[in-house]
Image (cartoon, rainbow, N blue to C red; front, top):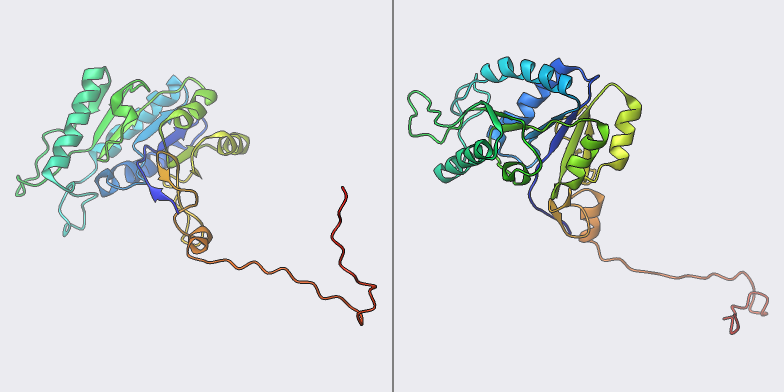
Length: 256
């Protein structure tokens, strides 16, 4: 049965996508739960420079509107990360991206929440001009950090998640049915969403990624999970119709 590994889920944004809807989906998928979930969407891949610039312009006010709070704050969009060590780790990844040449568009390092100054809070972070060679892209940050990796065309957009070491989930945002079908068929990732930012199937379907995002030979639940706990019995039967006169004789061939 499959065990879960890491994730670095990508969201591909085609030029024809509804960017207002994409931004709504991204803010929830990238920053919800402080980015600490296996199906978070920490990498967005706009196709074409014009798409990238339009998307970034729409992301900025949406990120600025995010409210960070504690669990009993009904208006909070997300809360603290799990430990002070993880907070430091996330902030170090942001620093690493900066040192590698990425642009820190919105910086969540050093964030404090009034009245909870000792809390493990990280502000929402947007990083642009990330490249596949950067360590911050290659590894999982697991925090409220969204990275923009710009793709020149559709082929590069397919290649980026396909070549990444993790292959848990991927999403494509488009109005073009042909592009969606082509992407879903070709991308080397275990779960694919089409205009769905977190492509987690309902429980009676199987869940599980590919490559370093999953270990084992079958998926984690659904019918494959049932098969893992099932002991199969093989029964071979023959019910000849006759009174034993030889007309239904069963002959094992000896030649051929």
